[in-house]
Length: 191
Image 1 (cartoon, rainbow, N blue to C red):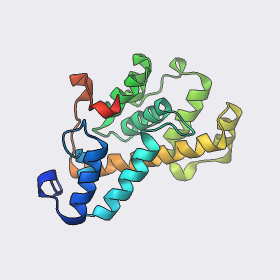
Image 2: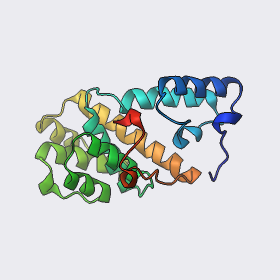
Image 3: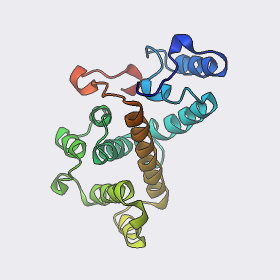
């Protein structure tokens, strides 16, 4: 990494406990993911990041996992992050059409591939990602008009912000794509 982190076998104290808890919850994984190691300088914060991110992103909530992966893929593409292909692969695992995945991965929405409801959500995600201060009441109203509830809109905001955060951390640390699309097999827990 560009900024030092603590490897699994070098973790001690509170950090070792956090790494161990993660390993116990993810027995199919071989060590702590690099994106989480980026937070090893602050074990207390790492524990909070893990709880918030895994609880929000890798589970169905007001939005299902497919919508969350679509947001993660699109946000990653919009900011030019190297982790875009990982979330594009996770989106494929959610039974999403490959042409939609490729469109989101490119960061260039081809609106004819998406229904109006999806279009509006991803237009909103783009606004939040690139020009958040310019978000308007009309944009939120347009989401409501196409069937999104306020709880779903709020969760879309959380997921958008979460992936802007994670991608910026990953890029600062110099993480590279894990190559899941090339390998055609991500870690087991993501299936």
